[in-house]
Image 1 (spheres, rainbow, N blue to C red):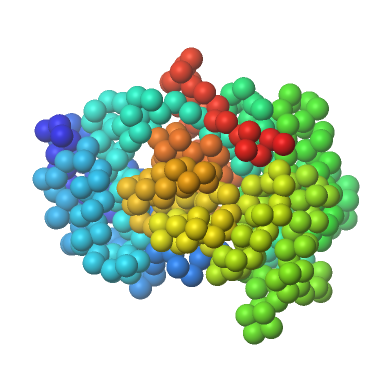
Image 2: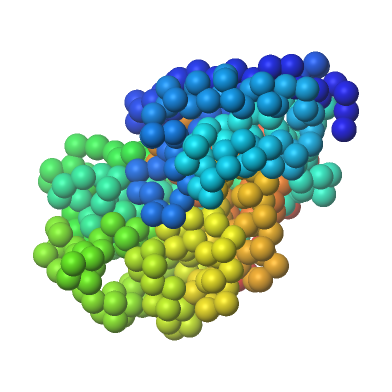
Length: 421
């Protein structure tokens, strides 16, 4: 505990994210430093994740920071992250931050950490993770989208992503993803007569093609860029299957393809896609309560990382259930799903202890806050899912380029041999 990190004030305001939606920004002033951070927001939310704001209203969160949270944090020390995050839980008093809001807690937790690092004068990643935090994550980039992120007449599958395996630096990996995004735009203008360069929430192209044609285009781009950029660019998917799930009929409904699949058919379809396109990673291939279906798919999928997002919602209890059933091999870590840095860290640590890959992730509604870039390094996450283009996405990428430069010869790219087969 350093006296200079004593919290003098906590302030909040309403700002806007990359979708033009209201979000919360928090500022923390210490005796000798200052920190600022903002909360992201998701469009495709898991049922069990934290409530974003009191009554889902940002203005209520601003009031909560000024009247309830700030006065309780003033005088505490910003370098005691665990104590700050515990106090946020105590102030809220509910299981899912329904009182002060998960986004509120997240923005405050982030801003406190930022203020502590600035006061001490060290990078945020090393303040949170220590001097041995030198592993740099590989960027998982969304370059084509459908589903809730794009709208009508786009692929039913939500995200078509790329993962550059074998890059010797983060800068090289990021360049491969940028190249893939640019080249895909050119290819789509040739295969989709209605394509006008439209993009979805995360900056990925939103063409009027079905999932099969989207996958064929993705595969072609991966081959092209792999040859050019000296990395092995692998195609990946986020199926966001909970958004496809028709609960009444108990089937996955692919509206644009006029197809419905039951659980068994969905598993076989996913396995077929993995085999046909050499997918390295598939996120949320089944609905958010189907732990057993995830386990069956994970057992059968070879050379592909099956990841749970809505399945786990960054929650320890759900992750532990998945671990017991072998329901996946990776977990998405979204701090605002669980509320604080300390909660997110615990989830990442439990995952790694049990052989799961923690994937730190942005949300579809982001600002230019780059805290998750530092969390990826601090937690030792091998992968960061942060998009490719758009200012709110490149903010995370550019910050990791800076982190890599700051660490110099100590920086090491994370090991992805688990999916390099």
